[in-house]
Length: 268
Length: 285
Image 1 (cartoon, rainbow over the protein chains, first blue to last red):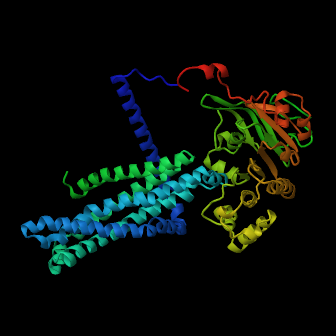
Image 2 (image 1 turned 90 degrees about the vertical axis):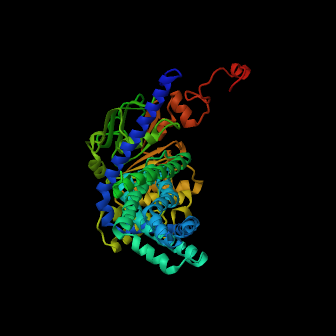
Image 3 (image 1 turned 180 degrees about the vertical axis):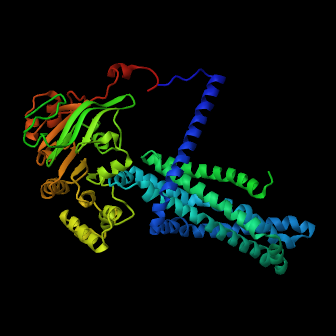
């Protein structure tokens, strides 16, 4: 049993140091895990059936959640924008405000968070249960590398699915904003679309959102498969891994979003 | 022939290690934290026989299988598979060795998202480029051998424990391995399923010319099929010989295990302070 320093500043410093060591240890292990997956991607690409199945499981099966969330996020965005902009007589710009908010920020971020909650948890718990029920050990004993056969296709499926889901989320959000602004609040439809068309740039706005979603897809898929693959093989261990995957993905996406926004807009 | 103390077996003893050993373990030491699992263990597996590795729960039987298949590394000692040192193999060499090995996990370890047929076909599809028609032929042959050809469409969740283990056995033999390791194959089975699995292990071993290693604590079942049995205790081989030899053994450890006595060298009570003192102590647990 390791002896802890007495209470006080030394103990605090010790515990902070220990936590940092744990954090950087896990961070390093995550990077090595990503390198292993990348090295095994050719195997996954050579078996497109495995990847397509994962795109279906993580992407297609998340469609309803993503579309509903996108619709209501767009509606509330339009409502909030209307309440503020109408004070200045600028309600015609709602379409532009909603579209910029959705394609640049809300689309990629909310989609990644929803993906972590819907598909990321499924990935973590599935791989964790495979670990707990010896399915991964069984593959190892059949001379089949589980990273190649199980992890890489799921990772790739997630990386492909997130940008597609983001585009669908943003499209549904814009539809929701139109519904709220034009149909419910009576904003002029021509102004709604023309302002959006004039102010939203394909490369700067739409592409930056898609680039973000690509990185979020990597982060969310990596954390989900990493936590599942390295979980303690018990019921409690699988549960903890699933929780960690969601929490870590959420925080990572938010931090990454700031860094990517600063990089893509060149503002910082 | 009965021996004790962890020495390798005498040449020529019926069923027990002789000159032609497919697995040879020498001086194996392995500890997990403060707990010593193996302490300079010596053990041989004779090619072509059914070898039982027995011992009370917690003696490291499953860990031994993980070590001989290279899933874990020992702290010291040598593990040779067909003359090759397992402990020094890189990942590629380990995978090459494992293609010659089958393993039956305690719970079957079937892939739960594919059906029985695809589970058995899995190693063939991963390691060969055989046409699907030939794979079908091989899979149905192996499923027929374990009596489950009719269950090819079922998902693993629809199988009973005994059926799952038979499917896992069909998968383990589908690549025609040289040796099969069985990890507690009888746990949780009803008498009929147990009898089926016991007979299958022996039948497969003889019909396919395999070597079988059965890790178990079910003395009665394994005694009917094993050519040689090892009894592990406190990190070493407490005794080995034919099952009949072990039944007649006079050591307290062997007698306790073979007759299933509750108390003996393996105590019934986990180490604890004095019962009376603990009951009378004030406060806390």
